Image 1: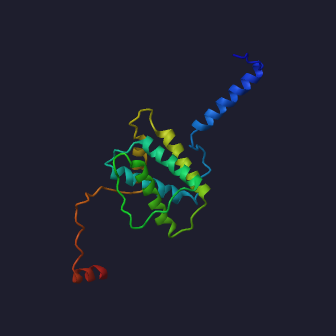
Image 2 (image 1 turned 135 degrees about the horizontal axis):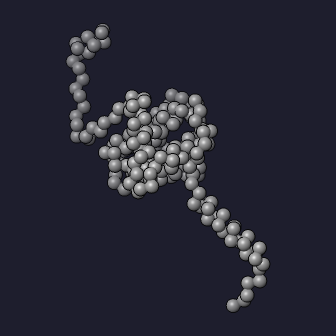
Image 3 (image 1 turned 60 degrees about the vertical axis):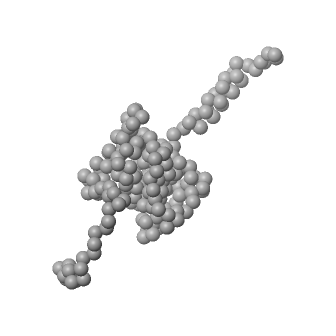
Length: 191
């Protein structure tokens, strides 16, 4: 085998380049700054976190922080590459075991679509910035355990206590309430 004739400095540069390449691949998408915490983007933060909270309630509060982080990272990558398909209006959303990430992405996108029907859609970079900032919040809040729900409990408490949001899961086999009778409906409208 031939002897490596590179100098110590050359070997070190190659080693640093490899290390830099590995760190780029493992770099977190989380953003810890406040750039995307503006008045313009607060409603998008709210809609995104409401989608996360709805998913948390739908899964009987079994959703984990790392699942939310993985779903947001996946959504960021889809937005960056432009591989995000448009949601179909007639598709029923179902949360299947093992597919919580996809369900969470669908819930966030559903919230966004409803919001963007009434307001102008911001740029993709701003949406990605909001998602990266939320990812930063998750990274800051989540505890080291695999079963961490610290971030999810935090937004659950924030949305319910500070903003008055209340969500409960209704079983699928529950029938809707009957509409009030016509006379009673007219009476209700007058009052």
